[in-house]
Length: 594
Image (cartoon, helix red, strand yellow):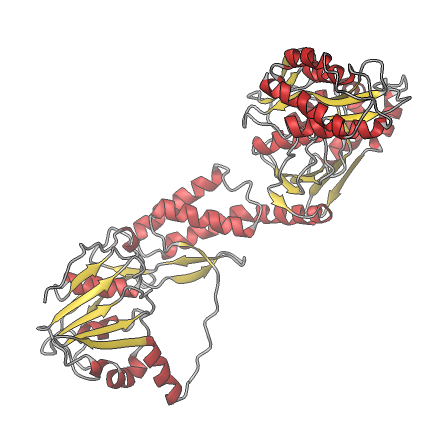
């Protein structure tokens, strides 16, 4: 009741603002039309009582410009029920169009007429292309269907993928929706496509896929792309929305117009005013929502004029996807650091692809994201993923002065109270060729302290080649210690990681206290160092659980594509049955005394 009163109040307000002069029954008659015909009656609750109140309103003035009145009445309705499809117009002499009767001419001639609204051809790559401007209904389909199947449908049926062009589709028949959808789905099981509520009859019609059709179906397995534009309207939008939510088609182009499944123009009493009102609404059984008003959003948004090229590119990518996924699975099986897990991941990845989960991927970016998500889910290893192939930087030979400045920036040292040393660096590297400079300008500043804090909270990893050397500084040189066992998948060998007998500069030794600071960002080679120092009881670890990284992975090209996989090929053999990223190094936060 409140919303209906608001509607009439809004209309009266706008009419008074315009200083109008019109029949006092006009607004009540218009409201009655809405009450009896508008597709969402829940928005008009209490309208009947509000109409009675409007009949007695004496503030309505006469109008000299009916077109202006129609405009303000339209604004009043839109601002109340928020439906841009409802319009009030003043159209003297308007003659409602009657639905055209099917002319009594031979089916062949009818088919020729329909061909003017349909274009069918086979594009390069055996891609079918079907452009439809008008969706014919059941009656017309039964009459001309055999001819259309023979001269249009059978032409594109053998293709390996199809593009359905609805960019210029602006009208059609409700009864044609099940026909189009059914040609792109299987005969069984029958699918509830749509539900259409008709307000004038107060009946909801369910649209279902059809068990039998003229000609053969395109089926449910071959790629289907639908092109849309901002002009795609009405029945065509319903077909697009149905096939999108059935996950049968990928929509490429622009957001559709957001029209109506059925709209009527109704005369207001004995006046020349008309109310255009949606009298039916579509309710999709999958989403419980409708495409009306807001339109159908594309899966891949491009300008309408670029949609065909984008669709062809998507189809070509999808033709390559099964081979790419298989190639990715083979790379994992052949190279992943944990062979049994690699074999299991490869098998399951193939099963995921066979289930159809990759069928609707439209872009390389989404393929890479899907591969990464599946590899993480199947392996539990965040290091196993799709990646960009970033070329290695060319070797450079900086001047000694530049090298010294770089080291000073990369390493931070300090000596705190009680002769406690502090050393921070944020990435491991191949330090061997600069060991002398590091020893002189970094290490010598902290080597004589009584205790040392090594800050790796921002260390993201890097090369593992320097781990043995760095660890060696914290052990005595009288004997070699096995720091870790590292398994290498390509060579199928395990090597011992040992302390070095010869070092540049002095050792810190095994007696003085060492504390290592960690955070969730501590990763890769830094985690390996932390793990070794903790396992051998050489350091206390303070901070957060580390990132859960891995030994530096290798990059592999997937087939002949420009997609690459990052695959860990080696791992610490201390925990051989578990990928390193699945078991983070977790520590209780501790506090230093004194």
